Length: 396
Image 1 (cartoon, rainbow, N blue to C red):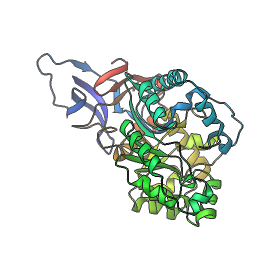
Image 2 (image 1 turned 120 degrees about the vertical axis):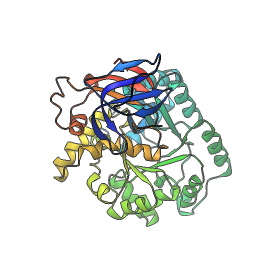
Image 3 (image 1 turned 45 degrees about the vertical axis):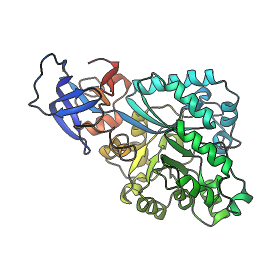
């Protein structure tokens, strides 16, 4: 396939190119350049008037709770989503697999229509929970990266005695990792240092919630005399989720440990838990991704997430983050901890792309493509979505 005369956000710097051509063979981009011409019998598409950008990466979701949209809207964060006694867990435990799968599928189709081609899910429910999500996404043109968890948590006594992960749970974890892409750990406050180090020995992707609330930060100091982020880093995570109340020292420690950060600003706002200090994260040298978190409390829409982050950061911190830096959170930066093959449009990368109608009434005239994408693009301005080299939504 040769796509001609398309505007493009090219490479890791998301360089804006006004008009160029792109060749796609199978699922990969093979060539980019204005001099490319059609080969014999090659499908050729004229994309004049369209802006081609990387497919969005939603780096943190819980789509299992799609079945519980807006339940308990006025409840506090612990009552809603605590991994042991939150009512979300009770809903998941008492919902049949077929119902969960039905609503998970709906969330996947919703994400595709909004330009999300990859999502990273913290999947509750142990081995069966990960299987359910595999079944839900089977045959749907979206890349699901499943970070499963074993339903095991330690009490305060075990944490203080530094009890390691029991051998029976290690066996369960090994089995879980055969069907999952990694582990999504609920948080450091549910485990001893020894158990957190046991998690670090797994060979696949690792991620953990950290410093999401003031209460969780205080609790870590109270029971261990260490910051929550210090303890979370014992798992050697590829990325830490939230970091809403992480200190500058915590952020610097994450950088030294090569751990990225995934922020979920709309979910934090919905839970009345503040807004992450992304400006400080950037100044500290953090690699930042972005996610939409629980479908129960937030729609899986990265365009809305980027818009919210851009404006609320200015409103609360009096500092405007560059829109290109925010766009990189949903593309290039996420690629850094997910293998480097997605989130970037250049030779030898997977062809996950969004085609934006530049002349739509919401965008024209487009004086700054990065600002336009972050604050003005919506499902209405998406002409088509490509996943692994195939148009899966809309048409060009």
